[in-house]
Image 1 (cartoon, rainbow, N blue to C red):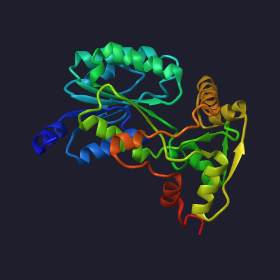
Image 2: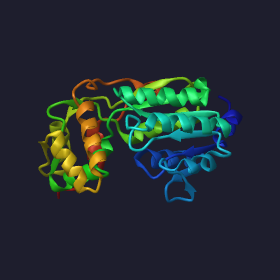
Image 3: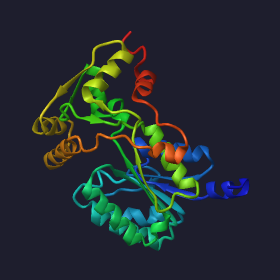
Length: 283
């Protein structure tokens, strides 16, 4: 790509949905640093975007050339297929020419939602799907971060392993697919370079922090109750806990080369992430 082409690409307007979330915030920051006109959509921000309010989608998309789509709570959730279908139609009507969709690995229901968006938008050659493993940052941001701080990570995963992906790697992948040519129509599975069980994750964090952090396996029912304690409605808490139990049954226990395919470098290891976040935290 020539310099002029690169400049033209980066002057496009990109809507980032859920721009205050783990990946949306990182994507918006990176795009802005490249000189892209970022439209940061959120429920309470200047650009209002709420997945529970279809009326907010059109105004947020109006004038945007591209969009990063990250659906809450998950593409496997009830109602996601219809939401993607409606969003796709709206994006087509507003003239959006590129979509990058965040999806989950090993989720058949999410694949249905991917297809609904692709078909409703009607431009499959311009859509990229990024299927991500669980984020390493789940242990430093959000409910599990509180468990880490208390020295115990409770989760319904047993001894199953996961190829934890760094959210910064994921954001770099998304930005590349939004701003560079050659990614339209692609599906990228992005993971970290190594499989770790929750017990191994706890050990890595404890090693970096210089204190004991242990994994406490719990049942799906126990975890659903804990989620309710964090304020989630009962139905959503049970659905989410069951989703975690399904995804962490071993069928996703493989690594991929998705980060290298897009970025030309290896994915960041969990140990590097842990050392950056917790080094010296226990002293």
